[in-house]
Image 1 (spheres, rainbow, N blue to C red):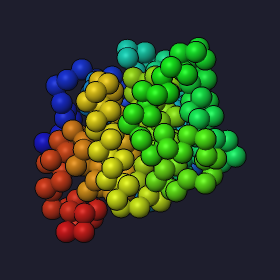
Image 2 (image 1 turned 90 degrees about the vertical axis):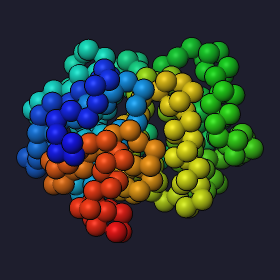
Image 3 (image 1 turned 120 degrees about the horizontal axis):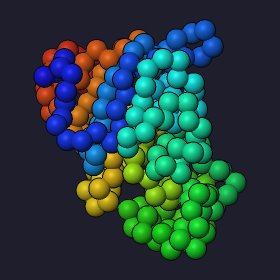
Image 4 (image 1 turned 180 degrees about the vertical axis):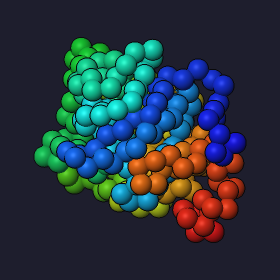
Length: 246
């Protein structure tokens, strides 16, 4: 059900219960609850300022959680430092990509595996580049010379080098040309299928996010206002009017 509590009977890798967070005295999230089942793609939709990025920052240890709980793989991650979360298997690809512009593509990828043995990371780079052949062609180029779409590919590939179980992506379509946007989202689905990876994606482009997702949530003013199977949300008239141009 679109306004129900449960969206899947599969075991949850990440469960968020009544989570609140904000900036100083300004609360941006108000009792958010969601679950991300193992090996599923879950999207969180909402307009600018809805609280999507705040949610990602709170879950990745970059912003204090003031109330509520987040359980990952059976353990609390609320207010756990970001580096510790990476070591536990959570990778966060932030909004705006944040690649190291003066470093080469290869050097950016190596940095993505900083918590792993260097030799292991070197061996893993070719596997990750298999998902992004455009990056393989630009491996010695400085990241700052890449297009917006190529930089997004690099940010995702860098996240994969951390060998995560949960990959969280904040607005992966932002600043990406339509033709590359489609390719990136199809690649995300391929990565999930091939590697049994779990993905949590926050996104303004509801159409492309729902197309690859199993389940979805809609956030408005820091609150979950709708949730359900992605196909059901894609057919919801309120969502079509607000986010899909229909």
